[in-house]
Length: 330
Image 1 (tube, rainbow, N blue to C red):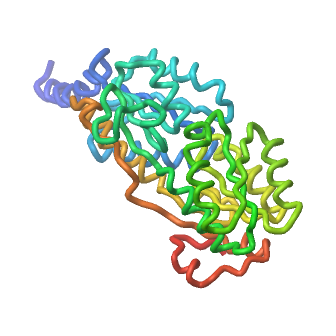
Image 2: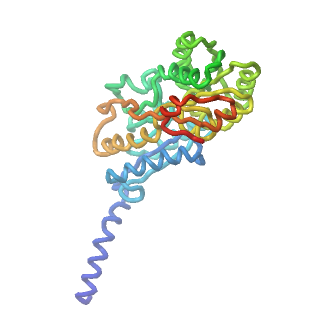
Image 3: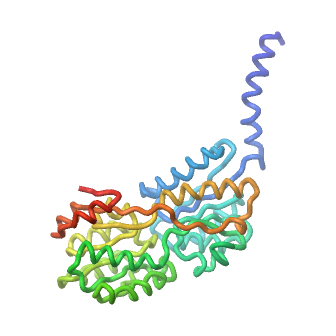
């Protein structure tokens, strides 16, 4: 072989060898991601994109030194255990799970593979961790809201719609934290302070959602608080449409609710929780154990106000509330 061709060969080989090494079995690290929403949901896609971007900043590239396997729960909660088992059988180095039902399924599927959760409200009550400071076991992560937030949601609803007298808190017992009780109890405790009648509104399908909201709209003074619940995120279009049709002012936990036409939302930034999960995954890939990583609480909250919806409901929003909102949709 001529000298020039040999040097060219070596140069090409130097470029190719790292890629070849990464393709060898056992060399590339592997993580699983289980998202509790539908794959077509743009909000959920933004969560995944933010997580992957932060991993890249930390030196991990999907298709390079990392392989990411993603599963989506969608609207069918019955599929979650099977998808969790499927992901665990791939034997990833760590799994990122999103939502209480998804995390529960993952915890049941493995007690050895490290799990980092996001958007879980009550990991201690659900039995995922021993405590926030000392998780123990193979699970840690990022909670999205504490139970006291139910009182804050009611306060904001009463502020934007002072005329509400009967307020239902909506949840799906199969997917909500504590089967709905996590938020229901503090909601009922806060209700007398705002002179409202609290109503527990468990729902399981779109028909249930329609019945609850139609009932609230039959007489003046009906209002709605929507729990942070993956079922209600997936079915948010039904909730928002029925609230508008029945002229029921509603308070939501996520920005996407207000952006999709809901009146007002307040809660933790879920995209920020996904970003913050990346360093935990990075640390586990580099040898840290979940038991050594304390569960983190939200650090970024956001309020979104939809003035167009307020106008349609005949609500005159105070300037004070408009100024406090992080985003105002007109």
